[in-house]
Image 1: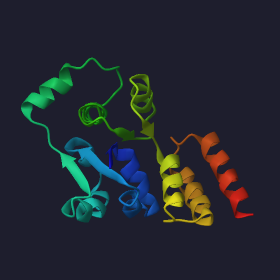
Image 2: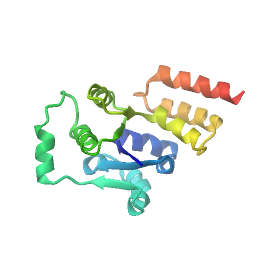
Image 3: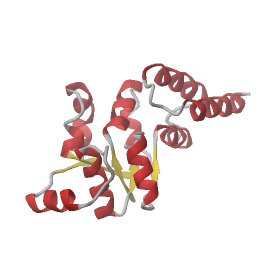
Image 4: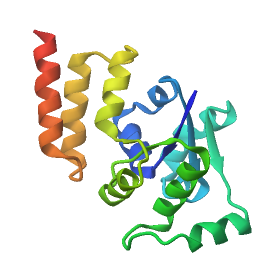
Length: 167
C-alpha cells in the first residue's frame, strides 16, 4: 500500500465536510508529523483519534537527529516548519503528499514528489463509492464557501463534470 503524507489543510477540509473517515478507506497508509497534527484544533484531532488508535494514521515524532537533518535541508522561503516536516517525511518514505498548500505543492512538484489535493480526494471517494456525484457537488460547493484557498476554476470544472455525470 502506498504511503501518503498528509498536511493539516487536508485534515481541516475533510473535518469540515465530515469526510475524515473516508480518507482511511482509499488504499493509502496515512502518515503525518506531530507538528502537523498539533496545527489541528481539538475537534479535528478528536476526529482522528480512533484512526490513530487503530493504526490507520501514524503520527511521526522526530528525534533530535532527524530535526537537525530536516533543518539542514535548504528549502524555499515561505515554507513553514510543518511544511518542512511533510517534505522530510515524503523524502524518507518515498511517498505521495496530500496538501492544498500552494507553496508546498509547488516545491513537491519541483522535486518530483507525487502530490494531490482535496479535488483528487473527492475523486477517490467517488471511485470507492463513499460518496455519489450529488453529494460531491454539494460538499464541494460548501467547501468553496469556506476555503478561499481552493483553486476555484478547477473546482468549478470538477463540479460541472460531476453534474454531467448525474445526467
